[in-house]
Amino acid sequence: MNILVFGKDGQLGKAFKALFDSQTIPKNIVIQYVGRTECDLSDANALSKLLLKDKPDLIINASAYTAVDKAENDMGMAFAINARAPELMAQYAAEHGATFLHYSTDYVFDGSKSGWYVESDERNPLGVYGKSKAAGEIAVEEAFANSASGQFAIFRTSWVYGAGGNFIRTMLRLAKERDELKVVHDQQGAPTSADWLAKVSLALVLDPQCQIKPFASGIYHAIPAGETTWHGLACMAVQAALDAGIALKAKPESIKPILAAEYPLPAPRPTNSRMANAKLRLALAGGLSDTSNSYNQTQNEPNFPAWEDMVQQYVAQLAKEGLI
Image (cartoon, rainbow, N blue to C red):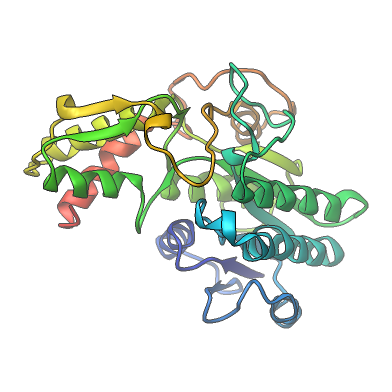
């Protein structure tokens, strides 16, 4: 079996490599990791040639154009990587009976819903980045619409952190430099560990022998239990660093909550990024239902720990490795 992982240099791509490296992989499984040097995903011909050459049975698309603000003036590149590239991967998978994993975002919603978004809620992205990701979702669904072979999962996630630059590491760097921080508190969501995201993704598609198993194709919300704001996440990260013995100038009580309107950015953000994860929880538990309006309450499920626990572990590991 051939596994092709796109986005090897990103947080999620690195998480997949670390996860596969930690396991005993059968000798008949070949895993290839693809970054920009191996294939420019904005080059449709190069991508198509790579897929036909490597003949993957499982395609994991952990790549994306994620420069949310830059995308406002770089629409062509955003759509090439976030929409056209996954469309080509999905078409290959549908035509060759392969399995395709793709990752999307809370930015496909406008954030106006008062409750938790479910997978079937209408897309209404606000900015170019969100529109490109929404276009990618639609392209993947259409590629498999009339296919009798192959299967796919689109994992919508939010506020991802892992090996590389992210909000948590930025806050910790600033907390070492400044006595006071100001962080937005009127945008809600759930921080998602890239390591955890890789694990739950593979739990859906691979059995204990690392063989592909059947699952219900479609969109899944892949986020941990609970909810917070950017301000809440910053306070939690700073406190976790202090608990790990890191000296910081800023303390949780010196992180001031502000409105998003006080920190204007080129691209609009959804104020509500809360997404219900019940469908994925059910699928991993062997359930058959594909719809639910359940909230993401902490329910002592090992596959879906509270976001706080994972952030604390992440920060503790950063401290241990001298990365704060």
